[in-house]
Length: 355
Image 1 (cartoon, one colour):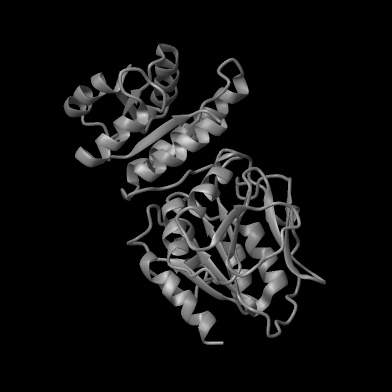
Image 2 (cartoon, helix red, strand yellow):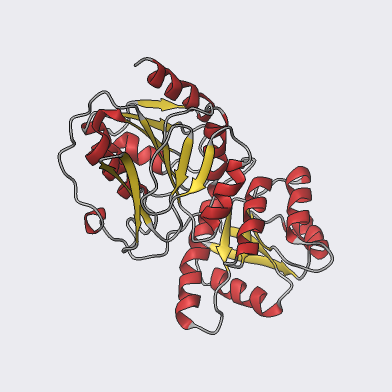
């Protein structure tokens, strides 16, 4: 297999050189060219035929979002957006993902050595994932540069409390490709759908923008989770970026806590942490769903949910952007049912109506 060919598009000569040097240092990647604006980039895409492009959101002559929209209509290809970790950057990135970008890369503080090293790991990981990803209408971020910690550091496994006649709770975990997958599932759920908890790998600000976006597209109420939020029918809570979300049961019913702590499986929020808390708290009243994403976050927690009596579902390979997390969960024996994305909501509703 040949090297992954990358075209870097950014109006800053410093950033073009930084990204090119980082990518060229990886033996599996080759930067075949760079461009200061989308107009020049169009010509280079035609002549150089890159496998992946990196694209700055803010550029002269034509902004990155306008260019991305045109590119995905005329010449679909894997695109990684280069975005600032600001509210404006988060909103623009959500738009880019909805237009078809595979993922995004956070702009580093270029003067700090540790930021450059974090960028190196993040950028090369995402370029390699993008080169093999299936192009969909929209996908979601991979965050996988933090040290690996075990979920035992955040939440201990315990024997599940036997489930009574309480209603079901949907527990969903996703990474790369997850934004569109989550949107599609929630779009098919009614306004009185079971309470839903979601972990989508994203940094702070981005999860809030994602929640606001999905809230405007579905009948359910979608919001970024806050500490001690109560679970309600027709409501979905999305774990805030940079914090783990844990399900608990109190005198007034189920509620969530959000807490800091080390990344688990290199992620914060971690799917495994949420899934384990569901196994501990819900037992057979949970429905666990693991969606498209790179890596193995969620597989172990989903197995614990299944062992506690939950129904467990994995998205199938054909409809995944990256068949990583579901694949590992299936291989571990953590999954009751493997379904295409378009069938998951209907199956979930059949489980809740059968009771």
